[in-house]
Image (cartoon, rainbow over all chains, first blue to last red; front, side):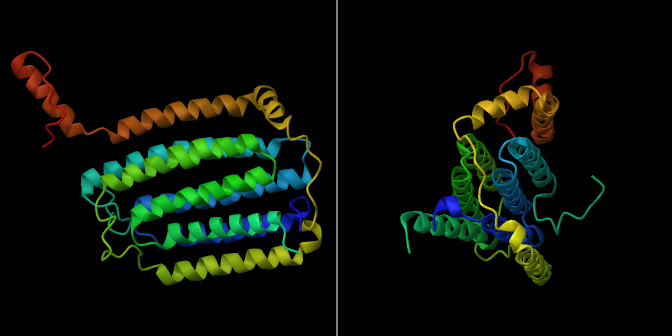
Length: 106
Length: 191
């Protein structure tokens, strides 16, 4: 099999598997930072899907790649703010486990 | 017939899926953070296969560089991330397996039933012109999202600084400045 003959469903299946793995981590992890890491896996799976559909179906217009660029930027911003929130919670409650941080009043 | 390209593809796929599994399953969270690196590299390799060198470089710089460093720093600033006796999964453990397995089964079934429409081969693309085209697009048709992204980055930076500062440290700084008349270097004196 040649890489030029790689069909689209390979990429769709791969990103489906990666999405499911990320979803598992998102639900099952206790540590808030590990939850954010799982979100990164889910976002990368979505990015891979965007790029694959662009490359196979609409290679002339680069909309899919622009989407991925914006997604990567938003993910970087999300990680920065998310980690700041996590450190702030850690300083206040001395834990970052999402099942222990159940108080809504500061 | 096993070619070099097929071997490379199998290796890349195995690396990506295995490291994603390690990220969500490993009990030592520092190790999980380091497993992000082969995962991001694998995704970057698929960008290369799809002839997007620019996105590959961006993946290396932003994900494998910046995001991973921030994640590791945050992990090292909190506690109980390396203790092998501490449970890292919550009570929804079984529900999580069920949810993700059914999600995966659903997606695979959908893909299988649409195999005809999804068996297309990659379209023709001028790999050398993509980055140039992308730059032109970001400053012509997509200039509004591009500028909005910069506003988002600025507000995220300010928000992160505001959220991460320690109010107690600043309080001490003000108190000592009032007493002696000059701001003392008390940043290290956390209560």
